[in-house]
Length: 185
Length: 403
Image (cartoon, rainbow over the protein chains, first blue to last red):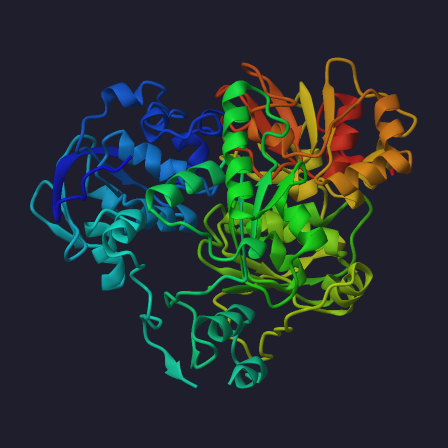
């Protein structure tokens, strides 16, 4: 079920989505409950907005979305359906926490850039940089995404947690202490 | 060290338990950090489990971490409504047998774990968004606090508190945060009511929704004969990002819908939308306490012609109790359908799927477009009492005239 690990810089055309795109829009329960095949799941990607989306999306397209992208269910099938539909990364004003965490597990680059929906229009060509975690819009402006620790960015460059484990036979946090500032107790 | 953290004045519940678990209590971890936590227990259900099993095998791992602390629960579409679902259930059963992990069929995961396994001080990871229900008893499953005061008015329940709260903060108002419920009204909330609130807190995105251990929790664990790992209490000077007050004395029965794009209103404000279906059940509101209220309202009345009322208990033990004590008979006499324990109509695969343009009032956790069936169907959410009264009238109704 593996797809190749993403390039460090991903260029593509955008699909722009509103705030609060929930997991039942991304892939309704009744479809994801009946298959374990990512290619089949991709046929229902964004079904709640457009049942024909999977026919319209092109490999390497990007998502730009408003606040709270991926709210609702814990279904890992939500980022999986998006990834296997051909979408290479999701940039959103903010992510619902489970979708965000699942994206790192399954290797769908997810970058949080407040204000991004005001800078991008449907089918703009933009690029996403997985090294410095930034987005460059059509007019060349660079927007830095909310910082995440290097071990998570590295994870994404290697295609997600599962691909990382297959390659290294360990998880990236093994032996790692908490990454942000801590107060010694 | 853990004792220093537990006794700290200024840490929240979330900060304390993360600090204790993350590095064996060697460091304080504060809100805003990314920390890596070990699990005390893990759970997946029949719609997240199959993919996890597939990936587990692809990773080339031979054995799970600890079979006794892993639960696979077949609850969402139980028993299987079709061949495709049945085959995924077979995959789960075979994996459980091969790995020796615990398997449960029928009862909803969160209710099963609450009835049988979770204890205060535990870190539970569940591949289901409503796993935060375990916060009801002080298990962890980030930051805000919600003092509540007063006593419930007639016809108003825990579900009305959390629906009202989601209406205030919005769908992402709790994203990544820990809700910590405090105040004099908490002592009036049963474990079932707390479980309803913690469970449904997911609908504003929160990571935790906590009730600290108090005499109600202690009595519950004495009754079920399980012991806490340890108790965590937020420091008296804990810093919260926001604090909200809810006065139960003025709270009315709440309805959210149609759909999550609508505002939360009182049952009276929503008006008399015709209901094709009323669904009472789910991990949010399928407990015995909920069915008791529903029985009280339905007793001696008939469900309105043209409205189907489906009642689905959250666990096998709730189901058995409702049959033994006559509640099931009350439901059937009223014309309602009383099903086996499962997530049921909530997930749109069986036992009450909505057709084109149908409208449903549900006690399930969420009202997303297409959640329970056709994309054109509409879902309102309410407490079991409001749902039962509405089933009798065929439209959204205030429960107080039946109590």
